Length: 141
Image (tube, rainbow, N blue to C red; front, side, top):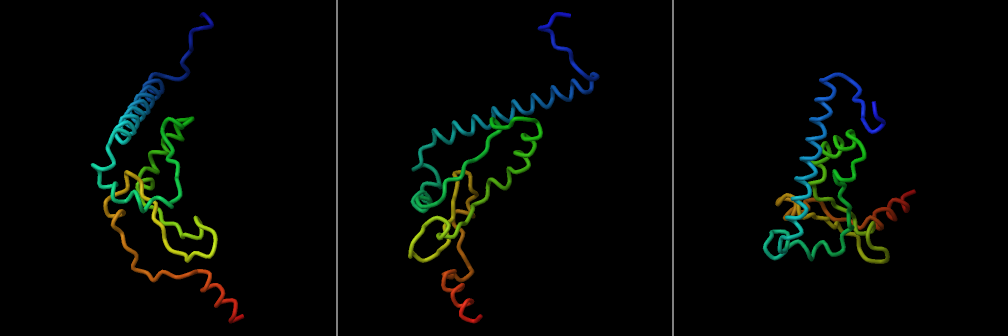
């Protein structure tokens, strides 16, 4: 056997399962590439996200992991399991983003793939200045 030949370890089922996993990973990567190209080619003025762009200007930039970054089959499975989590809008408190004497208020980071309800979400809870709340707690002690 020549050194360039690769010996497959395992039986026919193992080889078939490995081949199916490879094909699935390639198909998922191709779909992701197509989606990225589609998003890059979309004109922002033609999408519902164009109204949310200004609100995002002070939001934190979050990197989105890709199947291209997966180093193993398990990493690819973990990425697909977290797909639903990636579609959510994430709310930060402004003191996590902005330092200084500015009041604290919620800032929602929206992505181009955020569902429509996340773009028009409103806050039903009272917005508090956490610095005041903590200082009142300290006075009582």
